[in-house]
Image 1 (cartoon, rainbow, N blue to C red):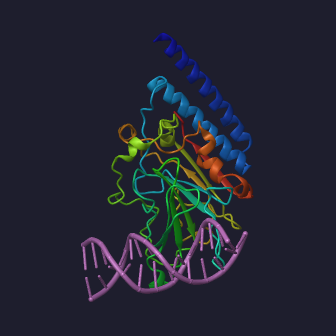
Image 2 (cartoon, chains in turn orange, green, yellow; image 1 turned 180 degrees about the vertical axis):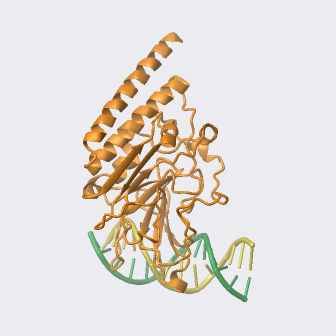
Image 3 (cartoon, rainbow, N blue to C red; image 1 turned 90 degrees about the vertical axis):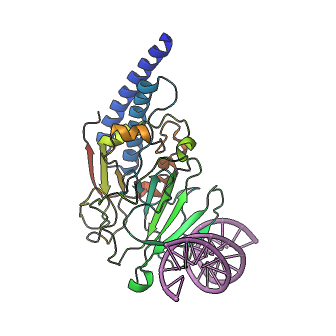
Length: 303
DNA sequence: CCGATTTGACCCAA
DNA sequence: TTGGGTCAAATCGG
């Protein structure tokens, strides 16, 4: 119908305009972590909405989510999870601290153990209050042999079961990290579209993938040193392995149209923003991370 | 047989 | 007291 088209057009214009404004704001507020995150979200949201409107009118999202091939590609890492409710908390006594790193994975059905290049061994699982899905606990497989005490928690998100929140604690001291940065052939991490696709909520936040394909935001916090992240793929590399609070938002550009058509959307649903990672993880505590960070954005031609 | 996972119990900070 | 993190025995799977 025509009216629908008009609506679409308006929507697109509106969203794009908004995205533009947000980008401007982002530029101005680059130094402020929370503002930065916020504007990034808004930009993504706007462009996403625009694409969505263009592609499907006002209907269902056509574009699927990006898979996360073996890299923490579509992951978002934040520092300091500790905010309100759904956050991975750091309890337990003497245990150091949960290194302030949390990743959101949206990989269709791959369980959070996908990727990062280390070998993990599951040592526990727990139902978490208020969460639909249990949280899994992993530790480095070389804990004993190499005294590597790195651990991680993986939790499936309630609102979007295809997303995982992964929190890392501790440093890998083992030398078994399967070379995290240079992406080998994504064999065992290949994502196959699964039934999970159908689970994805019909939120318009999906075509985001298009954006992610071209957007690469990489911020690193080097708690102390001004080392800059060497690789876009953030996994704790041995070189900069001393601080785990690096915060990255990185969208690789290896998703082509084909992928976009195949995979289902699961990343963020910025529009209905209440439940997205930004608000969830980025609230209270995380607001003061990145006091002095090296920030470097790379909006390589968004379109 | 050995290593990984599961799962209930236990520990402990809040 | 509660809820999250870890332990460790049982179980599974290659």
